[in-house]
Structures are given as C-alpha cells and as structure tokens.
Length: 103
Image (tube, rainbow, N blue to C red; front, side):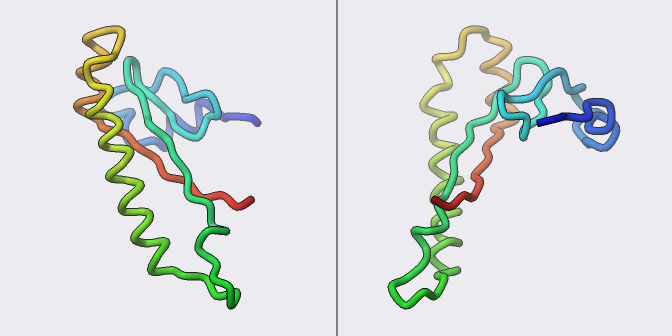
C-alpha cells in the first residue's frame, strides 16, 4: 500500500506530544520513537449463528476481552524490551489495536 506520510503527520494528534517517526510493518499504526503497538483481530465469521444472524452482543463482549488481553500482553512483556526507553514509552502509551476480519 501507499502511505501519505506528510498528510498522516498533519492530521494525527500525537504530533503535538511526540512526533511520528515510523509505522508498524503493515502501516495501520503510526508510531513515535521507541513506541510499540500490540495488534490482534477478531474473526467476524465466529459471530454468525447457525441461523445466519450476527451476534452483536457477543462481538461487543469479545472486543472487551480482546482489549484486556492485548493490554495484558503489554504487562507480560514489560521486562522484555531491548531498551529502557522502549519500556518507558510502552508503559506510558499502552497502545493496542483489535481489528476485524473474516475468513
């Protein structure tokens, strides 16, 4: 894909606090120096019942669990960062992203 870096920086509100320097490998998460983001996804197929109805309540519950899980991953990995600056940035920002996909 293509990232319009200058446009992204112009409209991203973190630029006022900590300027962006990169993105994660797929480009969906702009990052400042020494920051990281834990990503996960929920497969929408898992929320369709045998009757073909979509279970929005189950998706909402799963989104809460996924967010809690990804934050737990941050805590679990806190002492495994290569540099103290990374640990400090991760502890401060606690960035997580739970996306959606389908088979």
